[in-house]
Image (cartoon, rainbow, N blue to C red; front, side, top):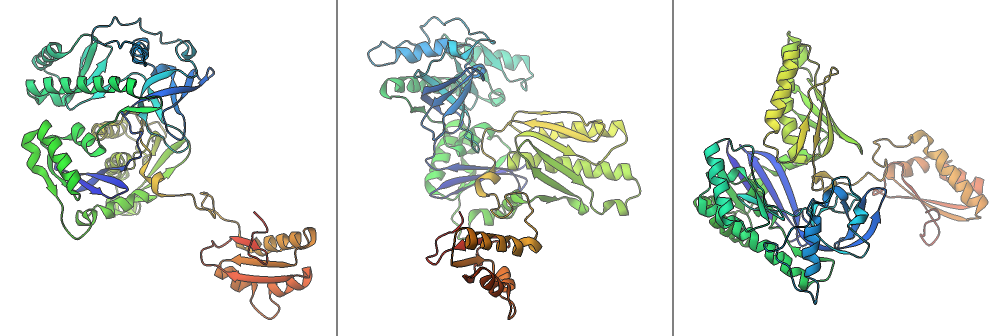
Length: 515
């Protein structure tokens, strides 16, 4: 598989496109200087305890208070809080490697026993603010690196399940144990299996330095304050994904180009040469044929080969995907074989769309009915294989007897579509508007109300050009009849910016008569 990273930098945001064999599979947007990214560590202040939810709202400087549940405190919350309290002004700081860890908190305890309103806490962003919700927090702090994830207040060395070799596991445990101070644990990532011993040791040391710097910033700041920021989104993707399958990383900004090149030089010098600076006159996404693929993000219909297609619907509760064979069934004799072929093609595209649109929560897929149990099992196994490269946590259930597949997928960032679209002001997102045959009746009722109940003598109707021509058509037009019937001066103004059934009622000065 040939993988490319294409990065477009503008003053307002950085857009990162990950392509596999020239096909866009992930799109990430990072707003410049907005903060509150997943992985950031903050010094927050508890604003409100919610006993019914066993949770609390914490002020970390976001416009909406962040949310933390009792289960997100982590088993070693008391040890973390001891470090935070010891770093307050006038107190002698406690070091993690020399302190005695506090007893682990119970899984079924109450948050109010550990947090109080006004308390200063050290927290990490687990989910960015999405829609009307503020950021989701955790106090179970972890610092991800290229080869390992550092876990303070732990003495455990965990190894990725994807590493199978017992010899490799023993080697990695030995390296980590030799470097780790007391009360620090690590989760060894899959990338460490092929890494040099020195690189893993350096990774652990650099993460410990970052932790000490974050803890040191507690004394210098008052809550709410940022203690440690995650690296840029581009470097985060490179850190988590970079391997020999990457053929090229292209960026159109010189400063970002140097930052990425320096970062890769540290983590994998052999791949430094794949970083390219784009200097073309054509926009970088147009040059790599990505703009066209980005537009498919907003399409309700997604085409597959030979006439088949998907319909993707978004609701408050879930995302629904319908698989349609189009006109294939007319040409094919074996219905079961046709259904299986379309379903397998659809599964491949659905796995891509879930990553591309970053769909989260519950996803229901209505595949074309399969009558053979072995085909249903094969489709389920194929979907598992296709979703294996998705880094978001997910669970896939086998097909039900109605041919439905259920997937739950974690989302930690806002959906790309929500960032650039808005609800239609005319239909309010329903896709339906009031019947136009009743529009004149509705307008007349409003005019009657304004004239008889409010005593208005001058009304300007601002409507779409089509409605304006209808109201003013003929010698005895509706406008003339209404003006004579309700004894007022009635003016109709065409406005192309208004929807078909939108109407504004204005007075002589142009101020709204009806809000």
